[in-house]
Length: 470
Image 1 (cartoon, rainbow, N blue to C red):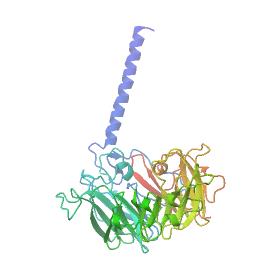
Image 2: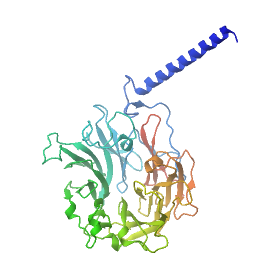
Image 3: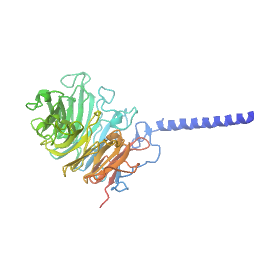
Image 4: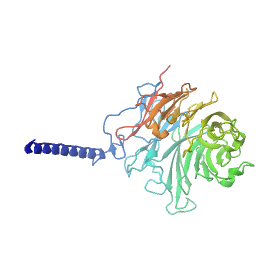
């Protein structure tokens, strides 16, 4: 090869490399937004939509033509199925990206039913106690935009509400009568699901709380014995501290490792080292499933009207060293609705599975567990045979459960992680694989499969697919 030919090849290669560098740099500027005006309906944070949307494939049994679809919203949503509403949070243009509002839609059509006034959550401007990390709250990891506040549904006496909460500095002067140490607290925005009637509640609170709406009120706890219940209708706050938790008689271990786990129609659900109980109601040792050690109950997860609990088999049973019992309890009475046995893991997981209840309350799934509450049967899909781990995320009133194998957890499975599967209860041959491109339904309501997904610009969207008539 001559020297001239070598020099020509080097020059050509240099031109190609330079062209690629210029293309990449221009592409990066386009995605950053630069000085362009932003369309809030098509942007999420600082990234713009880069191409056509790739809508998810619906599960079997649902029509491929979607019924309706949202724009850019928060990853979290709240359902009020009896009222026929679904609520999302959306970011309001202007300011520092720290203004939000609630938008409620008609479940059947997706049309807007009402929108709430613009709100600015506490903690939005770098105050202590971040409302939520962006991975969990709005699916925009790594962006500078303020994370969305948290949204949850709550129902009391047949009326449904949406609750938006945030935690941070509510009183910069630290007035002890108005806020916790340093002026921190929880701010709740409560909306009637039917028409958006609104009230605000400010609750002094010293540290980042756990907040839930699985019972007939909004429960705020510190992960231990301090808790407060907010009535969604009146805004009345009832604070309950350690001495008022109603420890069961004869249960010395109940006073150790005590923590408030949930809210039921009969009062607070509390757990301790030797079981769990409803304050002023029932105690777990008296409602243990058959074959379980009465003092071994652990409250694992709460869903409206239901509790998932883990138990050790009674001493002397053949499976006492190798298995554990999982049971679903009625939170009003403590009665066992269904139970199953699973192999005990060699290493205890860091957290319990998240429970998901069918809209009509007849089925419940959690991790590798599934329960047909009408037939009083439970099923365990554990890993004793070396099968990949299963995470069930959703179950319908017809008894069809959806999930994924090899997913890191429910959030990962719903985002498309792992391999999707479906399961029919009562099950026959176990989970069945689904097409890899299928996205799992986040929930079913009003005969619609609701799927959350992220488009090419990292906008979080929701598509509703109607169930195919039989």
